[in-house]
Length: 103
Image (cartoon, rainbow, N blue to C red; front, side, top):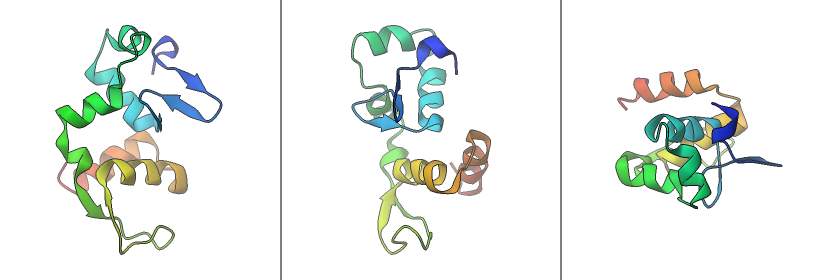
């Protein structure tokens, strides 16, 4: 991701009201290409905008991770963040994981 397009904080990337992972931040940069920096400056919740454009981010699914209450249904967005934070998945690994599940 281009450095000017990211709002870095001590604990992550801020592309929304909350911190988001690299995969979601990269998706924001890709989706709003050329406008990301302006939109961040204007206070637009880019991840929230992604949720509107891609409702599947809010889809409930069982992850199956023993470290993360596998019986609970988390959203696809939560699964993506979990895979990055807890399992160290790269953006490429996230893409592969999504494709394996038909996204």
